[in-house]
Length: 479
Ligand code: SAH
Ligand code: SF4
Ligand code: F3S
Image (cartoon, rainbow, N blue to C red; front, side):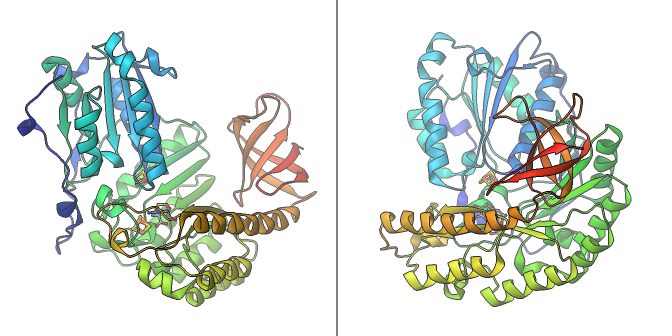
């Protein structure tokens, strides 16, 4: 496939970093499937692999919805796909290399099947350096589009099929919020609902503000409609999604928009509500009060802290100190005594000293998180931290990660042991991936519970008695 590069629309990270002062234009666009694309998938299959956060999972569900509207049928076997979609994450380099490795290994397959279409989308597609690399060295990729024009997938596939040429359409400026998009959900009992797109925080290590654009909130009516539809279809849990949910509605001129939205979601009567991700800087007391007031807002919170060192937090541009974070956690525990906390942590930020790492361990000891995602810092091209001097060897960083993980496991294990013999309400998501003979699901406090019970519990909220506790899961039996 050869196509003149002037037809490509390539990403531009400098443009992506710009934030206009005016509020995002929130006038909605409506998705409509064009006649030309409508029958493209008749008799064909699609395969989609999603990496990264729940925002990407939800995007994958939208893409699946569009493809099925076009007649494509899903397959779980990549080699069977007429269209193969790689819905990627850019947050750390290791994951990016894995995706490129997988696409690389499809080269011979693509030679044998020149009519099949390989698609690269998601956050990696928003990165200049990655797109350049793919254009130069991964000729098997037929279509590249970014996170701002997912709704264009049907038309872009049509363009590829008609022209037999490579198509690249990556926008660096976010457009309007598009509504009316089809969705093929991956779970029937739990549904993801975007409440906002983008991020304005610009933590110095993070690529997301460049790959996802500025904060744009959906209108509350549209969100609540989606929650109602989920409830009507039998879902028990809704997960509200945004990179920084506490900022919901700021671009719409709402004061305390997130709390209002949370209450309205609770009023729909759906059994369970969770939300990701909260930023410690913007957490408002009214949100804690809403969590306390409505029993269907689950008593667990993912609150990424990243580091326990004030100096590192300052250089990360996080906008809080370890003391203010601890205060927030204390205040929440005071109001909602059994609340559980999970977090994200980065070790080996440029020039992080042993003392600063120790401060992170101290914070972990203080907060006693129930679970944490921990990462070695990964430099991301175009972000401020990638330009900071960094003389800490990788071996030291890896050692810190190991020490941190051991500490995290100790706290997780101690917290979990408190659940022995207790009865928990567990939303049964289905059979455990590791063992067909047990069910798995999550308790109200977001504890992973593997349990035995009679046939037919999938999708139900089940009372489970806990019989054994591990660091990152509990075992039990349905009562
Ligand atoms: N919006 C969310 C999550 C963003 S990405 C938030 O602000 O919390 C998820 C996690 O990936 C982050 O919390 C951070 O811990 C980690 N992360 C982001 N950029 C990273 C980088 N360059 N290197 C290592 N970890 C990173
Ligand atoms: Fe990245 Fe920070 Fe935005 Fe989270 S809040 S997505 S870590 S820039
Ligand atoms: Fe990754 Fe993009 Fe989510 S970079 S974490 S998939 S917003």
